[in-house]
Length: 127
Image 1 (cartoon, rainbow, N blue to C red):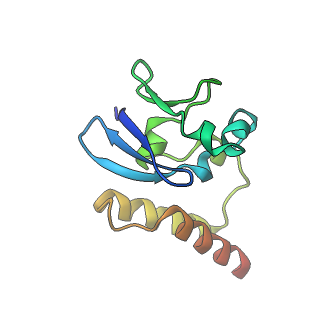
Image 2 (cartoon, rainbow, N blue to C red):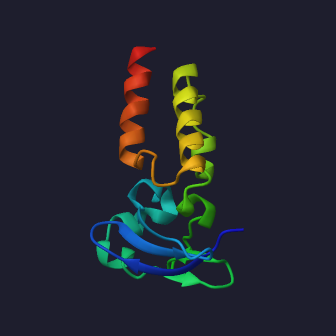
């Protein structure tokens, strides 16, 4: 099970995360700050910067109780709220499957979150 060892807030809503396997990644957290608990974090960059690691949970947290699953931060899982979204079209599902396979083969080779969202939007316009 992957855990977050350290967090360093960077510019905007990005953070440098170190994981229990020794990997370090810069993660854009803005797309993950969804729902009422994240509203104060989205609305106040200084509050965002108060992020810390909860060693018991093994992930990043804020003082209001907000946290993000370490597997989502690592990129191996999608957020729970994404699972509740509308069903994907066949083209979107193929693209997501392709992206996950590419990530599993080489975590550095996949698309960024923003690139993936744009590609999925484009595919939805085609259907």
